[in-house]
Length: 261
Image (cartoon, rainbow, N blue to C red; front, side):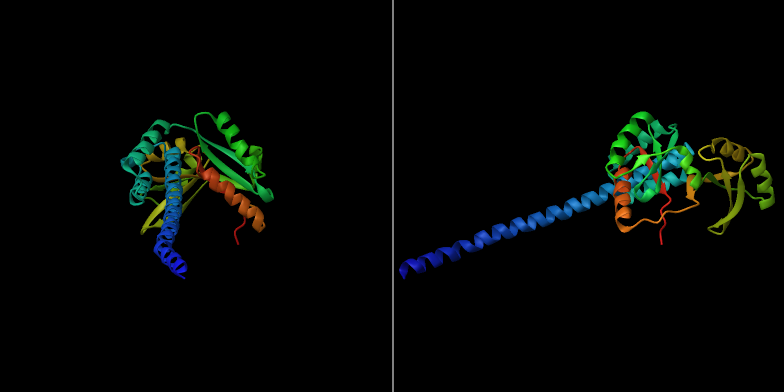
């Protein structure tokens, strides 16, 4: 009986120590797991902001935030998201070096025969394409001919401000060889949205500035004219691929022709 009592006392003495150890271990694992999730989410956010900055600089050829309002807005977003100052400065320095990089567009045939349009900014497109090709194969995807972009309405849009009528803006659109122009309203102001040749807006921008327009925004975009509906598995696979590609510094943005109900 005395032996059993001693065993019970010994057990009670150490059980709390053992349980506390395992409880502490579990708590640490939970904290570590949450921290890893937060770090991953933050990393994704920083990468997306960086890629958006690259897109803006690639389209405008202006890497100075004080001269590029859209870039300045993204810099403010990065600061509010607590991007480290050293990281942000490094991004801006790299953008200054790469502001003259030409944007390359590569179409990709993805799961369910959907099309992805990759906007790429890099020094060596051949090397980048080889690197991307290995990633595409893992998701049943591959590069296809540029002619497949005919299912998109591809154009460069220039939003500009000038105190004039739509008729006067239309005359200017004809002079700069724009495909179309329309009025758009924003913040109680009337802007003109010029539709120009895809990835070739530099000359049109210069001409508009010479005609006393204030260029507010430039965007190269491919708008699908026909869309593809994917099943749940195909959509899941496409999203996985897009998430992986979005993390690459060479990828400026990704567009697609996927039907969204």
